[in-house]
Image (cartoon, rainbow, N blue to C red; front, side, top):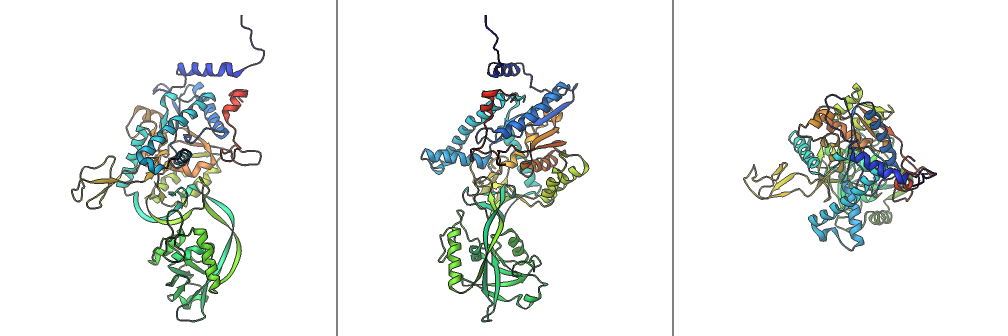
Length: 546
């Protein structure tokens, strides 16, 4: 006879019970016209490591909702899956290879991608096992991955459709460049961090008027190497007489014009603003209005590429040298301490460099309108309602979305360049013949797509879109999205405008926002800080209920 244990031991029961649920297909949802559907898509965790308590919270809330609806008699689908997380995974795999003494370029693109797929097998499996341990009642028969065949087909379909509609274009615009990861990143991936900096006040001599100067103030003296004008407000009486005159740009041997532009705030600083169109988003727009040259002064690793004494220096090394040379020439007026928000890459925390580069973009103005309307008409709602303001603020101030990334892991851009005439052909498959010159030699674009381009399609790509499947017809639109407030810009907004554009419907009617699990110091849990709690450790000790 086996004696019943005096205390409850979850370890003896949970795995056995969960396996029974799986074997019985209790979580599997089927198209059933006699029942009303209820669908939740799981925010796909990145395959960059293992889950923490934030994921445990997010999945517990979804599990409560889906089990409740199942018991109410709905055909309840909780759609699970994982995300390839392009930049985060590539960085992890590169670091792992470095420890083995291997450089990714030695492997070549195909060899490196094999290592990424190995990583996916190891960590994707680990994440699913963690979710099993938590007792998550997702439909594991339907598990998806953002780079599986079906999701990849949806990505190509959307890219080609948006390109043909004129919503995707390739052009030179200001983007956020990460000098460490050496790729462009979107506005949503830039964290603005307050840093102690300085305002350097510099005199630019007026050509032909000895002893007369225009004083500008800048937080980035090194960018003066790319200045192509100084702007003043057209209403500013102090500077009306110098509009159209030329200035000596210190340390460069170049002359630049003074232009009048309403962008300049007369009350801020000296009322004179140096214009560096290739390294500042506002200056870029001023440059377009006045047909100014765009001089890119930095290489991809943020070293100076301008011939002369600063060539090859790191941007901060060049800053010190330039400030010293200005001081030696008597052109440095003063240095004022200044706290300001600096854009940093949310992944590696490097200060981002705004830079003009040829990239692929999505035009956002038209696509944002239906997403704004969806909230205003009540087709979409947030719980709590206040997060609707965050959503609207982002959409109403949206800029074109830079979607190309200088990475190997991810969905490669389906653009092919004719080697005979340079024609760009965008298609789901490599073309056989150039429509312009008849040539047959093509090279595919090297870049991959922003991760969020594919995860924006998640609510419908996981149900078989672009095919008109039974699942899509029955389970879409989904019902509730459960997520943290930190992902509204990255993911929620992109799913909404993508769903409306491709299917004509909002991908869900409710977004349920929860807080973030933090430590005793109020910091988000993270592997790098070592302040995370692994749900599996809690489960091993106290069981999944805890």
